[in-house]
Image 1 (tube, helix red, strand yellow):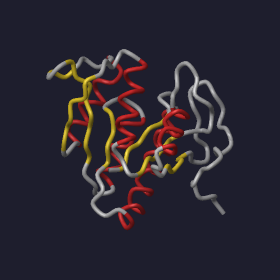
Image 2 (tube, one colour):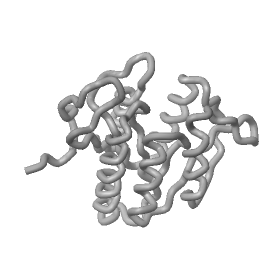
Image 3 (cartoon, one colour):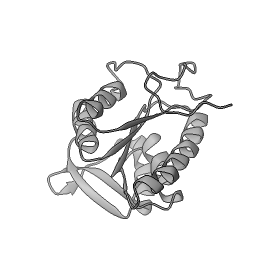
Image 4 (cartoon, one colour):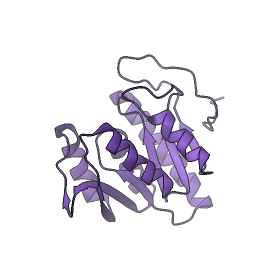
Length: 177
C-alpha cells in the first residue's frame, strides 16, 4: 500500500500541482511496486487530490472512513463532498474507529494508516509540527519505522496564509532543469 499524508491548508493552486505530481510519482512507483494500492483517510484537500491521482494512474484506491462503532461517523461539513467523491473512486472502503472532530484521534488514525503502508507520499513543506498540523510528526513516525517517505512539494506550492518555502530537507522531489 502507498499512503498519502500532508498539510490540510494547501492552496487551490497547490492542490492542482500536487495532484499532478502525485500522479507522476504513482506511475513511476507502478514499475517498482506493481499492483500497490493507494490508501487515504477520507477528507477534503490532499486526500481527494491523492484519490484522483491514484485512479488516474490506474491504481486501486482504499479509503478509510471514521466510524463510531460499526456505523460511519459524521464528517466535518468541509469534508463531506470530498468523501462522497472518494467513495465513488474507491475500490474498497474500510471503517476505522475514531472521532473526526478530535485532532488527536485523527493523528492516531493517520499513524495507523502510515503504519499499514510500505511507502508514504508526504505533501510537506518541511515545517515542524505545530498545534494544528502534524505532517512533520507523521513523516518522522514513518521514518522511525523504516517506511520509505517521498516528500512531495512541487515548485510554486504554498499553504494558505504562508509563502512558498524552499524544498524540505530529505526531499526526493527531482529538481527542474
